Length: 435
Image 1 (tube, rainbow, N blue to C red):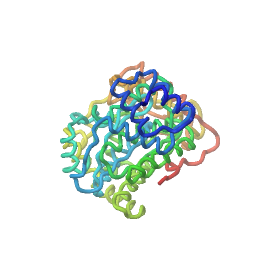
Image 2 (image 1 turned 120 degrees about the vertical axis):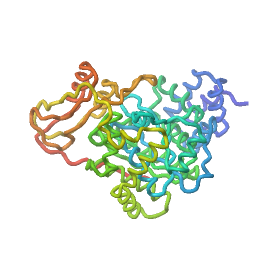
Image 3 (image 1 turned 45 degrees about the vertical axis):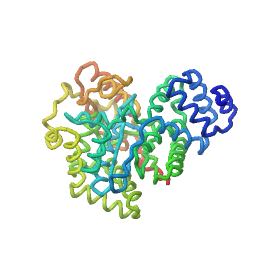
Image 4 (image 1 turned 90 degrees about the horizontal axis):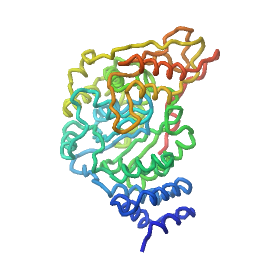
């Protein structure tokens, strides 16, 4: 007979757990039979002893089985999704999903809300008046079948074990465990019923992963789990040492995404990463070579086909299409404050964590799950790494609704910038591709 004590001791001593032992623990905790303190002990044992590939697969499967696994087999075509480990200004999903759908990929995207210094795709989408991210599985499937994409929040019955385990990891200092991160992400993505998955593993000052070696280990583990589960998976390690694009803040990021899809925005980092990740998704689904997929995605971008798909999705999910077509109709923040350079030189670095916290202090993010989010606040960046600035030049614009929050954000952003007399090398966004 299995006992929690014996399983904890086995993993504490660095031994491999069986499928039955892992299922016993996950099911026992989800049902309330195993108490928090014993699960905390196992999480800490995993933190120090890690998990092998098979153990990681068993944990992912066990977590998935605690909730609904969506069956999309009645919807024709290849179903694919993209997951980012989180960053600042990371609005890629808003452009990637409609572009992939315009290229024939079915995109059932389940996204999260922002927490801490990172933004969340669901918060960005919900800044569009009327846009619904919560829906029944039947409606979710109908929109996917009709439009070719659907973007929703995680439902309560999708991997409930993950919510319980993450809450416990958050208070037991085990959030950073690579196998626990991998099982958390992959259990949710595999439960969506997808055929292919592209992973965007962020590394840098604005990412959870600060070291490239850790990002690579996480990427390889998630790719391995996906392959063992019979899915097509690729991972990209991408830079998060400065905000993506020019905008940080929920509605601001939606507007910047709209401009990219319309061909009105020339932010090279956004286009580079969006085209790269979308092309990988198209290649995984179609089987065509990556260069051919890149051509197809660029064509969908230039022709406006991606923008038309975005409009179609907004309409299908109850959003106000008129503000997407004319963003100037949206309400404005009360204060727009200039952040000026305290000195001259080249921008050598931007502490992107501090940028994310500036957005939180404005009210654009949350430190607790139930914090309210203000969609109109944020930051517009006018100077980024390698740009030359002179003392008094405007580095950024703070969009705020109170003088106090504007001042706090200005302080964070000013301190985030570092300058030098020597121009630094350009940052390559895509660092590595792992398949």
